[in-house]
Length: 328
Image 1 (tube, rainbow, N blue to C red):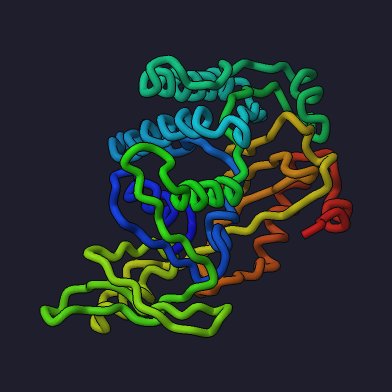
Image 2 (cartoon, rainbow, N blue to C red):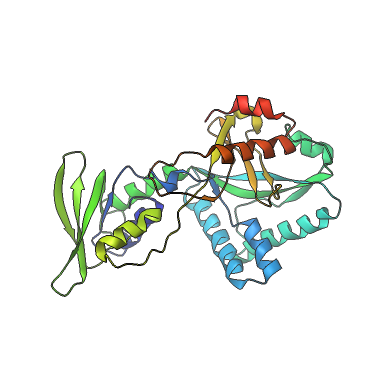
């Protein structure tokens, strides 16, 4: 798999002097790794759930994600940036509640990153200032907002950099450049006489030729398609993956200012909704629903309509205008 995980494994192996090959059925980042909300974040909602449910697992997940956020901001500053995100508040009791949560988020980031988070401090904005920061935000019932910072990054470009870095010869001392190929599909998992996996049979989809890749270890980094590779290795396998899909709607650039995002922390059905500037447009999403496994999932009309209805509740734009403005 030539997504973020597969190319990341290749860099890890190459930097240890191991011989490594990566094959990707389609193009690098053609799947999940190019369809994110374009954020590098620790997960404010995960932190809230960790405190409410006393879930130490979710707490450590947030800590790890915040540490990784700091690393990515430093490792790739040319394609990462801190993005202030406006969190609207509609009742006065939520002001201290959100303030405490966001402050805890900032302080945990400082502790796990040795006070070098690469992010500015959060701050409170009045009702008028909230409207100034995010002009399309509806002020009906609005008491103010909290603005916190997370990272924004080009996910597909980062994936490509990982693939290129993995293949770079003699990048550092002891580095063993990986062999990296796209449009090469795994057709069969190979086994030795002891029944142990020893490689894969691959078809070059451009030249329509098959070849074998052999190694001591085969790493399955195919995301939602992981069960397909597992089935090749063991027809009696037990499925581990339940496919799910998220929908984003692309709106014109005037739906979000170029340097501010917006998060609706609680929609009518307790979900989260982001409005983020991206490449001269605005990304709105996301949903999370069960789906059938496919390389090119199509958006469900119901999910798109849910995003637009919720947007009409929080933005000073009516539903019909929102429908007309949908670009993709």
